[in-house]
Length: 269
Image: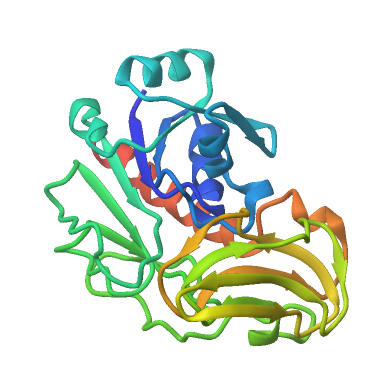
């Protein structure tokens, strides 16, 4: 079976991984040793700090540090998680998916990186950076496959949930170490303290801007290196079932990636 390597193991990347895994592909995901994931209950990156396993929607990912361990995961029907990008050269995947949503070609990918290279989001040009770009902007074209050119430019506007957009996203404007006494799934009121960021610039106290349930939150001790960094999000709907399932946007993007992969498999069988 074909091997897919996905850069990132955050929420959107995890949605993509679930769709490809359930379609029978062998899936490897690569992320940093200190993932900046906020939706940790639906992201395979949660297996990395555990140095163990993490399950999302019935699919299990396992932390590995060798290609042999990756192949064990394939046999055991698990997704492999790694923090060692050099393993990709030894693995030689058939398909690469850039799911970092970096809004640029941060990985310096090209169409020579693998037989099929798929990029998610803006500023990845189909035909040079990758073979296919997937539109990630909410709206009519979400999930559209682009075979030449780029997706829509970054809007810098979070999706609207329950009538709230930018207000529901929790950001830090200070560089430093993030700490919080709050937990995923906890209900907060507008003005409640979400956490603090302590660094050379001082201590920033971060407050909730709306009432709702904490759906996403950085892990304690994460070191923030830039301003306007996303540290979490609040869901005004207040329903904890959304904590444990990937979003509609992720499913749409995942379905598009699976569509692109299956087109390629059919054309090259």
